Every structure is written in structure tokens, then in C-alpha cells.
Image (cartoon, one colour):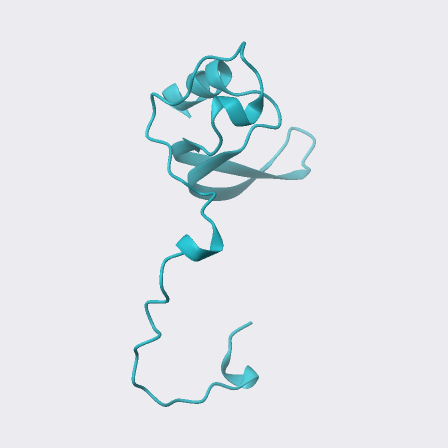
Amino acid sequence: WRQQAENLARYMRKGSLIGVEGQIQTRSYDDPNGVRRFITEVICDSVHFLESKSARGDSAISDVNQYDIPSYNQKASEQPKDPFEDLKSDFDVSNDDLPF
């Protein structure tokens, strides 16, 4: 988490909305008693603050607007257009074709 953890501690509080980019990594080990233990870790590449100071309603926390905060609260009319809507391909997909 490096510097990101320090920024989170400084500018955010429990319940604040953040976005985390990275990987989830799992591993296992045998403890001294011979019991297999499993660990899930978040390998964080970047953190995005998803709400402004005014949205949090806490004037005691420093202003996060100095960071490049993406807008995740777009209205439905501002949503990007479907990139596949102009695709001129006829194909049929059944539930049996899906891997899940």
C-alpha cells in the first residue's frame, strides 16, 4: 500500500468511498501446529477517492480535491454510449455457451 495507506489515513475515514485498483492474491502456509492457513491479500496499485470533502460532511478532514478524482457519480444521461451498439454482426448466444 506504500504511500497510499498514509494518504488514506490522512484524508479518509471509516465509511468513506474509495476505489482500489490492483490484484487479489491468495496463498497458504502451514502454521507451527501443522494447520493449513489461507491468506487473501490485496496488492494495491492505486487508490481513488470517490467522494469530495463536502459529500463526506466532515470539515476536519483535509481537502482531497487536490487529487485527480474521477467522476463516478454521473447521471444516466451522461453515461458513455454503448461501444457495441453499431456492431453489425448476427450471432446467437445461448446459456449453454457461457462459461458461468
